[in-house]
Image (cartoon, rainbow, N blue to C red):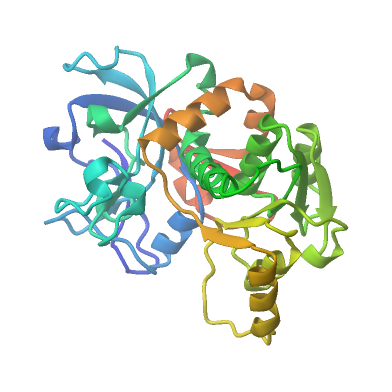
Length: 348
């Protein structure tokens, strides 16, 4: 079968292998026919050789962690042939740590977890893959065209769960939220906020293209420019860019007792002249909380599946701006303006 692979930590080693081995039975009892794989910045960084780890005794890593497929066979009876399914990316470490032992593997404490298409487990950019029942997440059949969004949606579901847990430290009555960044994570974060009845503001640098229209289509207010230019003190701020300046401005922007949730990962290596003492004073005196959130466990995946099921299908479909056939796989991994979510179509 076909598989998109890299030599981990070797820049420019992306390659389509036409005769890759069938998935080993040890990967899981459920055999799945791949439909699509979503592509994000993590894939770009792996292709650039910044990180990535092949499974034991293998030289190449099948990439792709945002999965969607149809069940071909499930001898366990958990799913039926033809069911739409996605697979949880992270698996708990083998020790396991205290969190992995209770299926909170997104909060692994010792870093020995594995991740499909990233760290120690083969990814989903191949014609067929296997999954263990505990890591298989069924999807509503109506999500066939957009179910590949489940992985980024699970990250957002976890972020909102963490926000709400912190919020309940006192009276929790949020009214507005500012989301910085209108990529897939940012727009999904805005969607989840509208589903919670909040007044939503989305900030991005783009003034043209699909992003403003997508934000407004779910009832959000769209802003272009800097954080400081938004005339608002949000109760919640979800930061999705990872831009160091935006991150720091976000911490200063949130209102008293507000919550800043950081979901974007900064690249590092950039120094900013910033008054850290003034920020500390504000955070302390206003009881502000800043949290980081990444990855998701099965609970969040199920929450995300429910959120996608109640969302407008045409809006979700509009998030996917590019669907690239497997035959043109390199184009799917090229970075260019105007792309929001790129999907590699394994059926084409």
